[in-house]
Length: 217
Image (cartoon, rainbow, N blue to C red; front, side, top):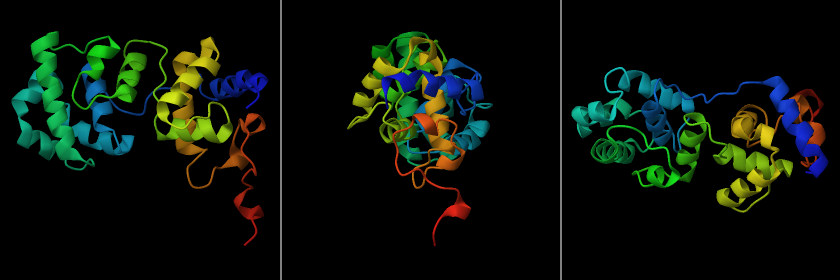
């Protein structure tokens, strides 16, 4: 993607969705952290389905600890890798209670020290809960960044660094939401829906996918 196309690319995404938000459901910073931890290799819709049962019963670190492993597993068993995630969430809650007064820490190092919390999860919490201009590179952002030529890279960390360099400062806070939603609903993995893409004029991907009725065969 040409440098001169980056600004209108994000201006177009902003015009279509001025205040993008995560699709994970939460009512507190801890619930956000727990939901993102549970969302690895799972859909937001699937996580929301489980947390609608879990959070009204156990929406704090201490409440999760009081619930115990067996009941926690039962609450989230519809989510992929639920056993591992339950153990990680329980261990994270123990650290939050013992070391952070039951509160979610505001630093990257402290977040990444929590079981099951990697760089992407920490970036989401820092951005959504604490307003930092971070870039949480998931599979959608990785695909969109490479396919469009916005920030090509061989791994998520390289893409993250390139995005932080290329995205204009005024768009940084919301950029990862726009890119996730664009990858989730338009620039999809199997066949990008170029015919209805608002930013196709700025994208390097060729050949652009034609509308379904115009495709041969």
